[in-house]
Image (cartoon, rainbow, N blue to C red; front, side, top):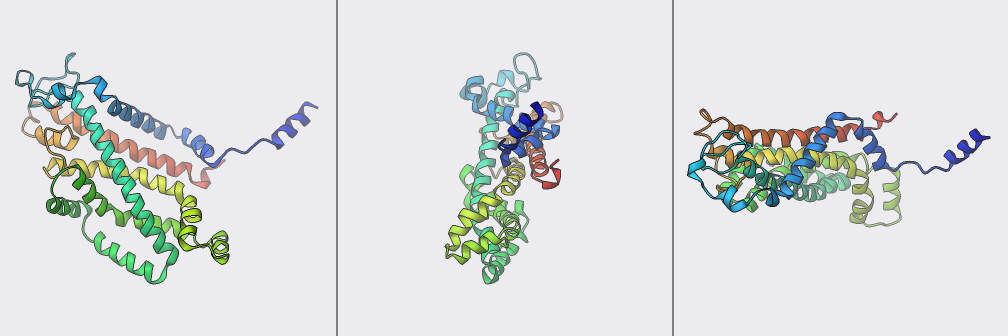
Amino acid sequence: MLVNKKLRSSKYEKPPSFYADVFYRLKKNKTAMVALVVIVIITLLAIFAGVIADYDTQVIQSNPAERLQKPSAGHIFGTDPMGRDLFARVIYGARYSLTFGLICTFTGLIFGCLFGAAAAYFGGAVDTILMFIFDCITCIPGLLLSLTLVTVLGSGMVNLVLAITISAIPGYARSIRAIVMGIVRQEYIEAARAIGVSHWRVIAKHVLPNAIALIIVNATMHIAGFIMSAAGLSFIGMGIQPPSPEWGAMLNESREAMRMFPHTVLVPGLAIVVTALSFNLLGDGLSEALDPRMKE
């Protein structure tokens, strides 16, 4: 009798949603969960940086009396060549890196989805022309194109975002085109076309929502690249300018002291590596969680 009740109750149980199923499989990936925890910690440090350290006195203002101090109780990561606290500068620098990565990702997704979905959906001449343009842009290495654009536009946060986003759009468009091409051939897309639904409504209401999971994975793995591109441009003096605590700019400021005081470059360098690696590992975990073959 008890067995029959369990069978009847399980018969009417609501199946788990798609995203709940994905998160369940993601939780099994210990590496991805550790990466997620690291990203959450870095994000929280960036959000509450103003509570942890004072921006003017510990991040911007020079203090020659405390320059190049090694890690200690007073300065857990030591100080830089200007006497500023490295821990305070790193957590404030996380604001620049995360903001930059998210803005570039969001902007690149908008234009990538627009051009990639249009190329896959319409095909023919639209696909040929768009892919030809993107092939021409892709022939130029991304960092070189970003460097050229920053040289023309000038340094600064806005121009840096614009330069790297433009260089990243072809990659986004190609990835989204490949994703959408597998969807536009489905019967429900043909049915929507047959009853007279407009092309852009089909793309917005039927194509992109069904590709959103793979798009999120693609975006997560691109954030790491954007963070490293920003740090690279700032390191050579073409991105965020000192005394702003951007991680690449911090590396540039500490070049001359790195032999005698390696902590001055190890701290911002590890911040870049750990953050980028965490986003890549999370992206790998999401990719595996979304793979139908991973279902039990």
